[in-house]
Structures are given as C-alpha cells and as structure tokens.
Image 1 (cartoon, one colour):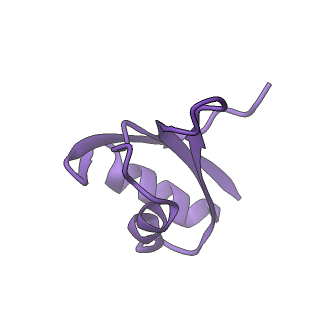
Image 2 (cartoon, one colour):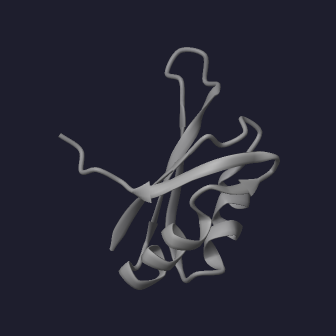
Length: 81
C-alpha cells in the first residue's frame, strides 16, 4: 500500500473526483482532502492510498498534468513524523 501526495488541487475538487482520476490506474483504497481546522475550507492538497503497482503508475502519469484547470503535483507521500 502506498500513500500519494496530491498538491495544487482546485479548492472545489471533491473526494469523488480525485478518486475517479486515480482509479484509472488501479483500486483506490482512500482519498483524504485536507481542510483547514478552523474555517473548514479546503487547503488544496490531499492524499490518495492505492496498491503499490497502481500508485507508481499514477504518480508517473499524473504528475504535472492538468486537473480541473490546474497543474497538479503527484508524488509519493513522505511518512508522518
């Protein structure tokens, strides 16, 4: 299982839209879009969890591509400290 960082998302992107984007590369286990704790507004980034093989393919194919009008950054997520 790999965790993928997805950055520079449009603030209106939903979990479902991000899941649809990544599901073309394999089964998506979870999508978590990060929100500001106080305002509950989206912060423009999130994390997708996928199986290793699909995750590598998604990272290679989706990094620096257009999604909903913005160029997204897709990389392997750093482990939490």
